[in-house]
Image (tube, rainbow, N blue to C red):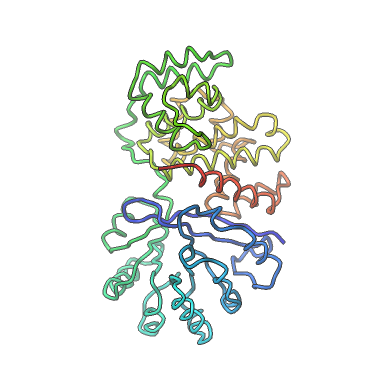
Length: 399
């Protein structure tokens, strides 16, 4: 039996990565209930090294009663794992004692899907972090946050989708946050985009041709020292495997080749256009690119040109700004109609590949299954590819 594994970033109030939540689900378990510890699927879940998914960050992982009774959290080091439990689980005296033992061993405990009431005083006192879901009623959010502040509990705000919710979470004193808001570009749609520097626009036009020459690209970029420095910083911080720092555009082209240089030029252009050059945004773009290529290789038609799907994933950041931002942004890029159609999710193979990758990245597995079944793509292979892509991204030097 195969298991889905996801990876959702958890940020601190300054927008830096603190940890990743690792949701999971079995192929047959559409209700998202947790699996029994002795089952084949649990073994499948824990055969993945968590460090491959979270790098140097920590991991929020949810544990069922059966998993806690089997002491499965002890598989992980206490400096990596944050044990997530539901309040109702801790109504069981046996589970409560197990969590006390974990706490004594140095593990942090997070209470999820929680609304405060006096009946939960003992449970509330045991945990370190309280999850506050911003999909709940505002009165419940305010009351729970008030009690957390009074008791000096750390708060994790989840389902943060808008700027207003982000500001509310900060106002309430939430230390950590999770939600789609952090993937969105910081731009003023009414004001519009500032035009891309001429050097970047010219380089993209040159690189879009099959007969592009290295000398042309160097000439286009060399007139703008700021762009050269930004590109070199991007390459040196994101691309890994070099024994020495890349010091010039000429060296970058020689080492990377035109195909790789095209990717970094496009990625830099997206960051410039959307005013978003955070390390996590770059990670998300790279993860999407790798997933799109992996999925394309599973489909005969897509396998003919997997790199175009990679480029589509690399440009995925433009999707997060909404349809108006997407339409305007795509006009800046000399890309094929198929890639544009995929990014706009207007149907067809490119759109399907994008939807599958995006669904898996957000742990929206129903969306993934809906399309994957058409192409006979299995869970096991996709989960392995997802973990492999995450590991490659985490191994990159993002700082």
